Image (tube, rainbow, N blue to C red):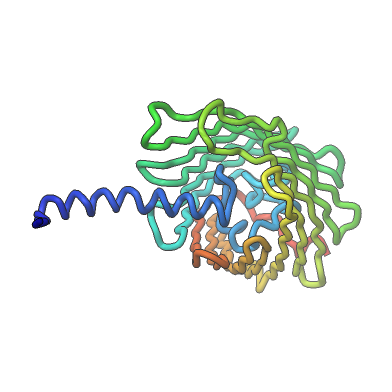
Length: 294
C-alpha cells in the first residue's frame, strides 16, 4: 500500500490546523483562567490583577459600576495581547460623561477572532448618594459567535455596585455582575454571577493597598486579589498585583500627561504565560489623585 501527500493536501491540512488550534486554546483558557464569558478589561485592571472593587475615577469605567460617580469626561481604548496570540486578543473601549446629577458610562469589549468571538456592550449610570457613598448600575448586551453555529448567541445582563468611604483613608467596595443570572438560551457558554468586595487603604504619600475577594456561581473556591499602587509624582504611577486560582502576578505603569492618559501592563498566569496590555485615553482634567485624600 502506498501513501501520497500532495502539496495541496499539505496546504489544506495546515489551514485546517490553523483554524482548530486557536479554538482548542480558547477552550483551555476558559477552563483554566477565566469564565466562559470574558469580562471588560483595561490595562489598569490588568496591572492590579482585578483588585477593582474600590477603584474610582475614569479607570473604574466598566469595572465596579459605582466607581464612575467621580469620573471626569473621557474616552479610552485598550488592547490585551493574550499569550502572544492575536486570536486570543481582547479589544475594548470606554467613555464617561458626567452631568449635574451623576455620570453616564459606555463600554465595548471584543474578545476572540473570526471563528470564535464574544462581544459585550454596556451602558451605565453612577451617582453620589452622599459625600461618602456612591452607587451605580450597568445594563449589558452579550453576544457569542462560534463558527459551527448558525446564529449568534445573545442575551442581556445587569450589574450593580456600591463604594463607601467611612474614613478619609479607607474605602470599601462591593459589586455584583449578572445580578439577574441571565444566560444564553442555547449553547454551552456561561455568563457567571460574580460577587466581589474589598477594601482599599491610602497610606502617606498616596500609596494604596487593596485587598479583594471574589466568588462566582461557577466555582466553589474564593478568589483573592491583592494590589499596591504608588504615585511617583503627579504624572507617573506604578502598580503591582497578584491573584489566586490560577496564581497570577502583574505590574504596570500609568502616565498622566495633561489630558492624555496612557497605561501599560503585563501579567503572568500560572498555566499559559504572559498577557500584555496597553490603554490610551483622553480625560478632561486631572484624574482623582490619592495625594489629595491624605
